[in-house]
Structures are given as structure tokens and as C-alpha cells.
Image (cartoon, rainbow, N blue to C red; front, side, top):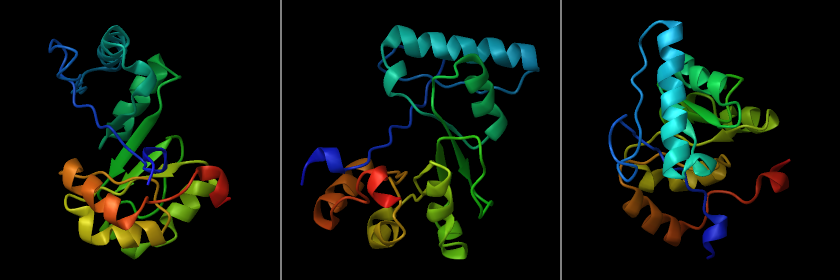
Length: 166
């Protein structure tokens, strides 16, 4: 199986001031102006580290990823939700907690109709890869990427190119 068929999601957890090899994290809870400055600094760090063009900004806070997008419209953003069983608009990637897909198995279909990618948040996804493949999820957010990648090698990729889904 070729790596081009495997959907990878790199979750960068960055902390301003750390080296580029460590990643970049913005805990943004300040006022709007201060928040925008922190977001701009995050974008500057990503650019300086040479990883901006392969970064997706993910957060449990929709307002935070939207703040990053306000200063860098070219950066794709994603929202991880623990409670919303319906896709929200305005983001490129959706990361619903995996049981939400059981509550609403149409979640990926609805998101794909909007051109959004779906990567369920699942700390231990290996036993449910069959479900994500059945639901046509694009990727998975895992606490153990090495194990999940090995399981994907056995189970095949989650889905083919987005164009084939439509």
C-alpha cells in the first residue's frame, strides 16, 4: 500500500519560545487585540520554521482557530469537538469525538458535502478503523500514531481521494 493513500494528520502542539523542532502552541485567552498578536506570532513561528505550508491549526476552541485564520487566511483550520454531533461550517477539518459518529453516522457525509475533512478524535482508534473506513472518514486523531499507522497497514487506508467520494 502506498503512503499517498494514507491520510495523515499532524497535530502541532507548539509553545511560543520553543525551538522549531518542538512545535508551536498558542494558549489564547486574552482580549481580541492581544489574541490577534499571539496568533500572528504563531503564524510567524510556523513560517520561520518552514512548516507553514504543511500545517493545520487544530483546537477544541472554535474561536481560537478562527482567530488564527483571521491573521492567516491561507492556513487550514480544524475544530475538535467533544459534544457536537453535527458538522459546523467555516473550518477545513472536523475532529468529532468518536462516539459522536455513532450518534450521527451521517456526520462524515454531511461534512464531505461541504468540502470538509473528517478525522475522529479517538485515543485508541485501532479497533475501530473498520468503522472509520465504513463511514468514509479521511483520517484519525490518535494518541499513538505509530500503533495506528501499523494498524492502517493491516486494514488499508481510511478513504481514497476526496474527488472519488462525491
